[in-house]
Amino acid sequence: MTDSARFLTLKAGASARAALAEAPLTPDRIGALAGAAGGPKWLAISAFYRALFTDWFAEREAPLPIVGSSIGAWAGAAACHPSDPGAAIDALIEAYIGQRYSMKPDAAEITATLAGILDTILTAEVRRGVLTHPRYHLHALTVRSRGVTATDRRALLAAGTSMAGLANVASRRWLGAFFERVVFARDGWSLVWADDGIPSRTVALAEANLRDAIFASGNVPLIMQAVANPAGAPAGLYRDGGITDYHIDQPLLARSASAPIVLMPHFDTRLVPGWLDKKLRWRRPRFAEHVLLVGPGPTLFERLASGAVPERRDFYRHAGNDAARQREWRTAVDAGRFMRDAFFDLAASGRLAEHVEPL
Image (cartoon, rainbow, N blue to C red):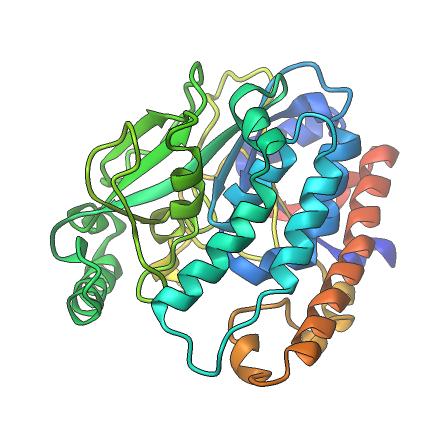
């Protein structure tokens, strides 16, 4: 592996590896982009995101579905800015780094702070782009709480979430008793969703539900207040799409797709199917055959504070010292530029497939 390639981890499902063996990777060979959930972790790959949407896909003619949960949906929305996606993504980076809290914030404070960040980037231009962009078509993943999780009362929600976690250990299919996957999407798209036992439906994105849908996609249970009753969707409490689709273990594309690769710009080296699977190291992706995961490599991790991408625990590590946290997070943004450059160098050389490992 070359020195620059060590800034990258490249992994792919079987269909994606076969496609890469047939021909070099170009923007037109990407059938969908998957944006994983992960909050601050996204900052480490924000430079890669920015370059994808401002440069690499700029000459692409075919529409591109952007499928995102949590920060993946927020970044996808910013990318839909009709004339300057780079500036919109920069605004998200700055607003996200700049968030501040009291020493013991409650759900109301956290919800209000993150709502302010989202409202900063959901300008009139971005809203228009989400609904009408000729190239980028956003799909925001959320879940609608069911049964014992359909509450915002903390004690009851904690108990319901614990029950969901125990059920998930036995089988992801049992999550369907607690959550329904609801995808808010532009009309006219028929992506392929796995038969994973979790009930699913698609709701049309519209001006009336756009903000609620994107906000709900990143609405972390027990930390934030749920989004209630988005327009045009079934009544209920809506939360983080990462609960069921943390890193989006989904086919998304048909086997016969002319653009056969799902590009996943990622801040991790593994694909974790759901939020409740984070500690289940034995749970592997089952449906990501089309995915090309582009994540940080060992040399990139060496440039990050404590050898790790930003995370929510940084608020506790740097409690009372936002300036230190913000410096670390900006270091991660800067380091991500090496990952960006390494990817585009390999893609331009036609040698990217030589560095891809099985997912």
